[in-house]
Image (cartoon, rainbow, N blue to C red):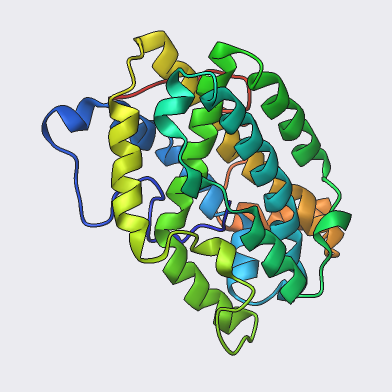
Length: 266
């Protein structure tokens, strides 16, 4: 789970525009249906402050810690589901698991991976992941979560370069979790999208994947809201910064919130 680069919708295969049957597949549906919530996520004040160095290294470490907790739980749930067959077995791959990158990044900045405590939004998400992993329909939501996580790595190199400057680093040490796939990024993202499109799901099942993706984006917004006060920002200041960035308040009309089905557009 990474910060997002404004110039790259995390679910667009770089340099490619879906056409033909692919344009109507689950991957394209996810991209279209999450466009609004993705935009609201990348416009969050946390993103802007982090990428311009105003949160310092503490902001990045705070996001890393929450990301580690979510990554561990999501991977564990998907691995367990994949072992039973079904959609997770068609989607989850070994390279989707990289907790050691989060751990190494935290240690680089003096953090202790074993001491990370979940903020309230993360605690709720961890409980949802655990519950989802226990049901066949819940696993579909987890696939939506993974879609957001994997898609966000598409802009990793841009984000890494920006953070090197923002955090005043000499190189990308401490940022390895941003770019887990390296030169294989494009190939793996293409394979992931293809796997989504070949899942034998009906419309109601696809809607559960889409709802999961929406819910994960909303979690990220809530997580950013929760981190900023730990860095000295009052809730009122956070609201002001988000309003200045053109982000509507959480739960405003037209805003998808966790647990509320999102309209799946073609």
